[in-house]
Amino acid sequence: MNVSVAEVLKKAGSFKDVAQRAKHLKDNETKALKAVIYFTYAKEVEWLIPETDPPYKASTPEQDLQNVLKATYNRLRIYVKNGGYNEMSRTKREMNFIEWLESLDSEDAKLVLAIRKGEIPYPGMTRHVAKKAFPDIAGNFK
Image 1 (cartoon, one colour):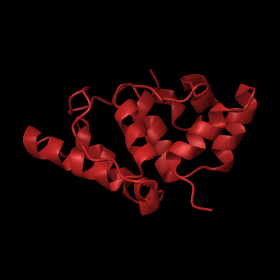
Image 2 (cartoon, rainbow, N blue to C red):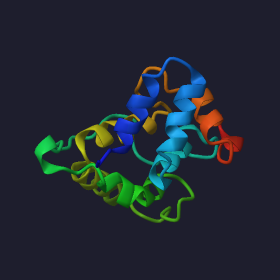
Image 3 (cartoon, rainbow, N blue to C red):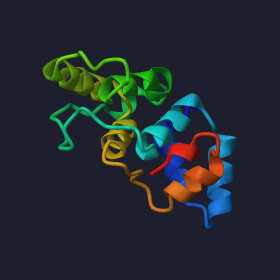
């Protein structure tokens, strides 16, 4: 089954306790999932795009885009300081961000908009759960 990163996080948040949530994340581990968690909580991540949501056209469920974030998660580096794109102009970066959001599953796009504010928008999904699931990346969490 084709499950988006947002769907994995949302389902993890629905479990009763931290151990079950962490296990669900581990069982559904992908590089994209870990990147989303890292870019949400890592101390050194400084976003270079505005906190306000940009105008973009959300995808529709019929477009079946659940795998796009999994395939393009490396683009997150474009939007943060020291991600290798510091010389990109602000306008180009923001236009690129909007185009990327429009290419994502609508729930993944909402997730990306939330993580740049340092939050995962699903009840039960906390920094503590992420640390328990992925201690290998939790060393630099805020």
